[in-house]
Length: 407
Image (cartoon, rainbow, N blue to C red; front, side, top):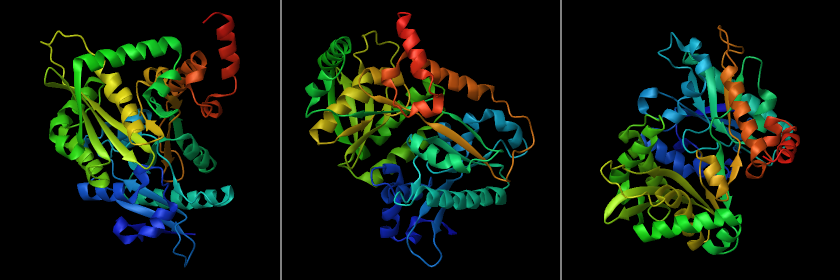
């Protein structure tokens, strides 16, 4: 196995990349990664694993520099591994490089899925060693994966070492498989009480709000501050510049037909927006924004649920898509409206082959696991079966006890 460092996808044959990248994952696509490169947010290097003398790519790993000053708060590893910050005290607060992805939730591995499991493990071992070498050269103690999906974590688990750290993310991914052929078919799958609430939310929104779908490119400067406003309310310190760069990357990668903004207006005033990106048969709802007006005492006409869930569902039906990726955060609200809740895992590789000096405090990680365990026990039907292997097989037993107790 050889692992080559490549500074740009311009140096990788298009057919070779397309053969290994997951065609259903927008964030692995050549178009997306090239758009990130052009925006200045691209990987510092790509690691490309091959058999010696063969052009076929067996696996690839983009490596990103992660700087808090860029404003990508959720993709700042130090946020999710604060218990490791003792290792960064002499490194200007930096813990390591970011591997795999730095945009969108649910990081998947770029590895040839036709390989047998044992060979995939060899490929991932080689990529791990190469990634750790890059981190060591930069004087950084870790390489991080953030928001790994369950399949990626399953593949990486065999190469996790004693000095590594992993934990469940504080948010989960949500996805909705669209039933039937139209919005009424979707509503028909919801429980009766939820269906009644959804009809009310859709009806009030339609009565109060006028909507318009425009190419994302035309709306970026208008909606970027709205997205920053919402994220700031949840402690995510994104800058307008960071959001503008990311929206521009979506637009550049996907074009006007596949990257659109939903604009919601009440009496002519823009009150909310949703960003929708189409990739093959999937629609990604990547952002929601609004500008709160404290002087406006009008009731909220359910702008969030419509801009982030119902309107994207209607749009997906209209263009013949099968899945809406409703994203991370507000998981129970999305689950009640039909989305499946999928687990996400954070992983830190110790670059130097062992745990850096210092005491690791695992309390936060264990509390996070208990949080998801409790939610999964109380709401088992909302959670995908992938949670079983991460939380333990006693979930169903606890759920049964909860039901017998009348919970």
